Length: 329
Length: 279
Image (cartoon, rainbow over all chains, first blue to last red; front, side):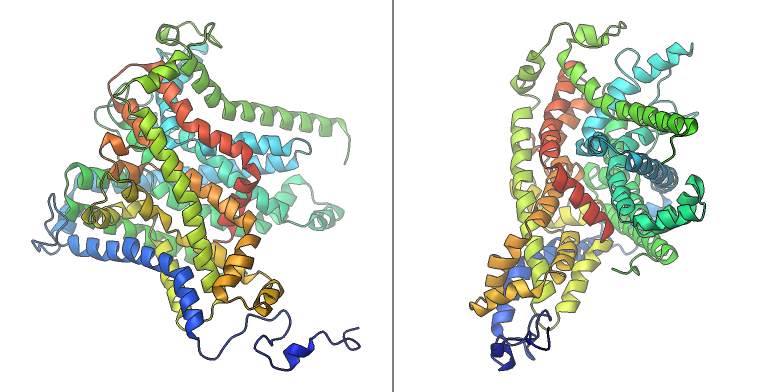
């Protein structure tokens, strides 16, 4: 057919300005003309300027500020060299907060991963009403950490004379405990982890569901012919086929855990049944107190760089191990 | 599918587990609404009631009547901020994504690398640097200070660029023959064809903006520039013991998003799936 009816219209073969092979890339001119530049500046310019000011300029300025004694000012003044960094790394609370976030991440990432994958596998196998179930698990994603912290703090784990968790302990003849204040054993971890699970699991479940839908059916049919059963199918087919999704989910979860702030701020700040001194502080809470509370922007900037360096380092290591970013797309 | 006894049992067990989990996931919503409609006495009584015998809707009116809470203005601020941020940031990312995908100018790759490099630095760690810049421009306690830094989303640029790279060139051909330039091609052909993508990333941007906490806490120090989340958080961490009011406040701050979720569900699910996988 193509031989009989050439698919290239005459105009294109004639080499008119619009000439180019069908379906090929947009015409590439040897030198970009001013029209292309004008359009590029119009379309990409605002984004480049915005990222330039709010990322590059911001980070550059803050980097200089981290070598300054900037108390209550953001002007580059008293140069103090590495003092801020030394002070920060000598600070017990900052070092403690780094330890806490590492521990928190080590807990929350595998737990969220397992629960969201498990939920996705459960929901995926449901034949009728899958959309309704997906909504039920996804809808907590719409809730802010502030509102969720309120329910967890004032209704589930403390407050309201007993709270649901203590009411349930009562059914088994156990005494009520102050969940958020109890540090030994660290019962507040249960509060932190269940809250984050409720808020985030639906999001990652949707990612896994999308991954599960992309696995072709005949792979399972072929495996079934070979006599593979449930568990083996999961280990040999489903999990390897979800590899890309899994790596993406791990990366997203890691970054989300490392940036934890909202629930720590709202659960542990004083007022109502919060504690006077928080049992745990994340680096971001520490940074917030340093920069916004004590107005020490030099020290705060130094903290931002230490934390950024840590996150970038771990992300790169994780990318190296899991091969993220080298996928087909 | 086998219909053996164990098969039926397993299906039943699975149904039971899913049912219980669904209830557990929906329970906090029920608790929030129940508590918002009780009165203080009933709420703090050790006697458990499933649903208030008398609906105390006045908890909601009292919420807006109390001038110290600033709830009405905070909700207005949030609507304004998310209402501007979501469409504006999505449109900006779409335009930039198109330019990077289609317009051949020298140095395009290097500029894209600069955009992608900003992805490496997590958003909430940069609040000190961003505060330094926005503060020096007088953006503290202003709406622009709350809105503008959130308009530039490099991740969305990357997603749109990938989208427009896969966009079939034939469709643009007709427009080119009609004499459209690059901007015209984007404006008349590419943009109208990316409706689903705009809707899904826009919905996600709205959710992010509505639920944002750290940045509004940093920049909105005066009650007149509080967002709904800051107003609720201030209420939660204050010393007042108005529990029903507190839960009414939570209901009010999450209601707009839950409503949007139920309406724009398809786009939100699509948005999550794309933004998670192609990153």
